[in-house]
Image (cartoon, rainbow, N blue to C red; front, side, top):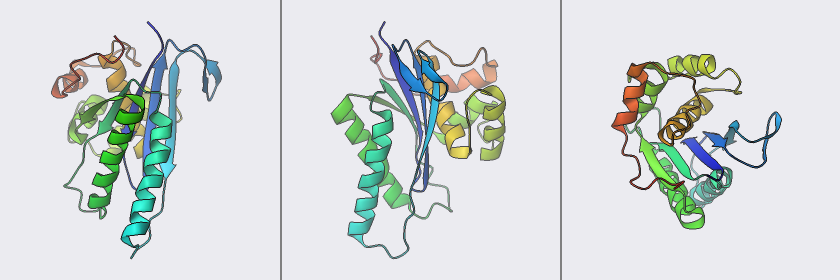
Length: 198
C-alpha cells in the first residue's frame, strides 16, 4: 500500500482547525523532522469586518477556502465536521455554509479527495464517550489521549478527533485503544462506499 493521508477539518470563519494523520509516507516533513507516519496539526485564521460588502465577504471566503484546501490537498479522505445550526453565537452561518461547500467542491475537483461529514455530537462521543460533552471537555480528553500532538485549542482538538476517526475507519487507528462507548460513534457515520486507498 502506498502512503495514506487522512485530514480532519473543524471549520470556522475565524479559526479553522486542521489535523493530518498519515502513514506509509516516504518522507513527510513534520514538527519533529522527516517521518513516515504521524500527525500534524494546523490552524487557519481570518478576521471579518462588520458591515463588509458582498464582494469583501466573497473574497474572504475564497482566501480561506484556498488556504484550507492547500493543507488538505494530499488527503485521501477528508473528515469534516457537519454544521451546527443550533449555535446562536455563530453569527455568520450563511458565510460558513458557503465556505463549507467551497472546500468540499475544490478538494473533490482538484484532488479527488473523498469527504465524510461527522455531526458535532458524534465527534464529541468519539472523544469522550458522551455526545453532549462540551468543547472544553473534548479538549481535555484530546490533550490527555494524544500527548505528542501540539493541541493548541478547541478547533485543533476537534480536527484531531475527526482525523482519528478517519484513520480508524481505514484500519490505522492513531490510539492504542478506546473504550467501546467511544467506538460506538464510528457506527453513526456514513462512510464512503469505496475505500479511498484501495
